[in-house]
Image: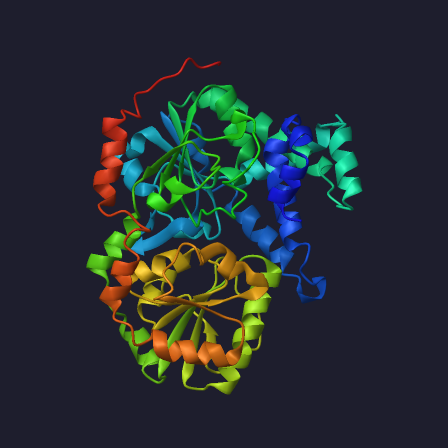
Length: 450
């Protein structure tokens, strides 16, 4: 049973539970990963991760103490290196149009030393304080109806800690919003910031999400077949293209296609890297691999590709980590590569490979075909109804992998780009300008409940 089947089966009960608006995200992840063999999950270096988070906590601390008209919530994983600066590919152009001095960027840091701009602070301090505040929440949410259906379906979902953390973050964000009194709030990934979304709605602040990854009918962060409390929804989604406007039961009602800033930049400004060219010329084919975050996905893809790499020395696998590199023994023709960002790396490759990273949407727009490793059927489930079969293939064994490497690498880049042109709207800057001006979005005011 997936999250959609669960919601449909118990629609009347779940629609009456206010907390379901955010609990469904945690529940959805639990159900999604419940069928995975726990033996395949290996532990990461949690101590080192915590140390890095603590180091980033006070980044830009002095900028908390100023007045701002707009709040932006993003993460440093969205930053790319453009002309000597680390640029947030989703947010920075919008910030430039508004004016840097009017905006506070509250950023989730993965590499806090990369950013040199003003008015950026670390979200880590909010996460840290919220974990202290939740210890003072002694209320017990007695969701008896939810308990019954969880027990009936033998689902071990300990939602109490999720509720406590939500309440703590909601308390912090609501007071933060009352302090700054922003005109608008822009975010990346609303389902990662549900307490903020609820706080904005309770204070009648318009909240705008900028699309960061794939949105399709399988994504429970954006789709629900039951009626959800509107207080957990954002007002606008700035989407990649028209695909997001055609999804049934999408949670966000106002979807505005704008395109993608960085893809358009690369299409006109890409320059090949000499070091990368010297590395790849030793091999017949180079494959850029977008890794996933979850442990089981990370290792399942690595294990599959290691067997391919060992048997095919003419292939070079460049592993592109999202946020981490593990100390793993790899074949000589397989390596973690971080000298360039994922897009510049892929542009030096013959093929892009992943399970279901959103880079699969972007690679064809850059003229690079996809080879999707269909582990647990996630690749087909996420992309078979979106991406063209002319440039995206799905494999489950080594022989098919090699076969498609040979056929996909022969496809003309311009043809691939044309096949993908509906996924991303063109003229990103014009589209953003029109959204801000024609809709007059920056000046729309609601009666705020300060």
